[in-house]
Length: 209
Image 1 (cartoon, rainbow, N blue to C red):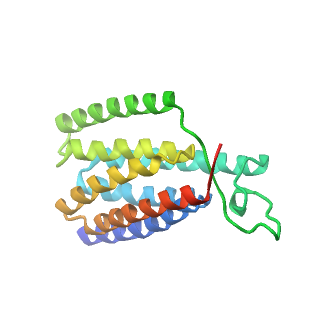
Image 2 (image 1 turned 45 degrees about the vertical axis):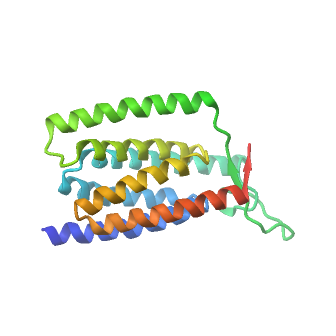
């Protein structure tokens, strides 16, 4: 049975790598990969007793469906990224460069998001410490909360999501190595590297609106 979950973890890690690659490029298909990655990780995290991260996967599943639909509507309405065919922009022969759409985050959104994330972190940590056999309740809850925040900001195309992912991935690498979840730990190392490229790529090709 342990071998079964190990193989599921490997599949989840591979799908996660594809997802983050598509995320950097702002491809709509990323949400499909995120959907199936989340399904695989539900089984992995339940097996490990990481219930906050398990719960997060259901958030990912719902957000993936909603974001896939929203990004499709944006493409149809022409609210998209010049040069990105997956977002529905028409690209002339004279303009082949990929340009990414980045929305400017307001101070109100930042403050409210951080307040909500802090409340969720403490609530999850307390619940999973008291009522479950979670081996790392607060680390588990912190990674889950940061992931929810970063994914929400990603769905809105805020570049700040990358910096949240950096913190989240560093914590995740530590947690998964201590729990001997090596495929997931390696995936988070890849995530961390891709964060650096994502920040560079978005800043170089992005247009802020």
